[in-house]
Length: 287
Image 1 (tube, rainbow, N blue to C red):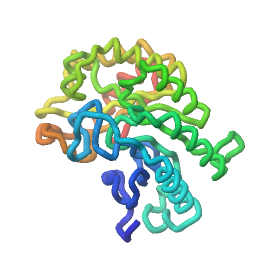
Image 2: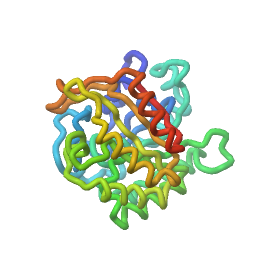
Image 3: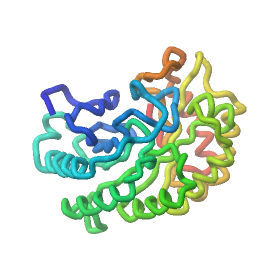
Image 4: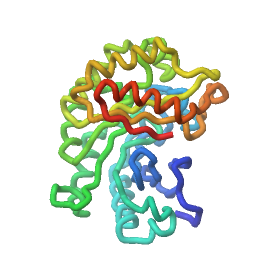
């Protein structure tokens, strides 16, 4: 990494490390440093969320993963973060804690056909760095940030079972409660009940949080109709969820809808969080 100011929660530049697949961020939701793994280096995704900060986003799947390079990058950066001066050079004092390794890049990570093999490789790396096992004072989390779209596939669900064994968890995207709301936010035509079934599949094999982005579009917050429908979906799976990550619009979108999107005040996020908490769920709010 070149000399630069401290990393911030507003800057999730995938190129900051100078590596192809691995990049560091300070994550407001993880609560410290997260080592990101970007499998979609071609900026291809099967969804197109209107708040997405990926430039030149296109529909599609990732190109083949160079497994050798990915392993080299991950080992090199872990060594730098754990044993080098990365934290003191690039991270503010209060955030100097390695919290997780997160599959969170420029598209849907589970769409990479190599995903099962990458988890096998990651397990070996974690063991080599003594980062896996209940004996660790601060065991590192392995997080999959996913839109959940492929969690009706047997191969993906098998990978999630493996992820669970790596102290893993899934952050499953659910931004709307109606078909029209999901189409408006995520630019996909899916039925809410079908996505709910994918969420049920996910929680059955791996600890799972729902992640929801809340923002204003054309100056208006989500409609009461869509909010009620969203809460209804959560209510159907609440007993199996770890909780909900409710977050605001923090980093600028690179999608055509960007001029139409704006932040909601903290009070609006908290009001939504209280409605979710009334269902008996734990809610983490990040502006």
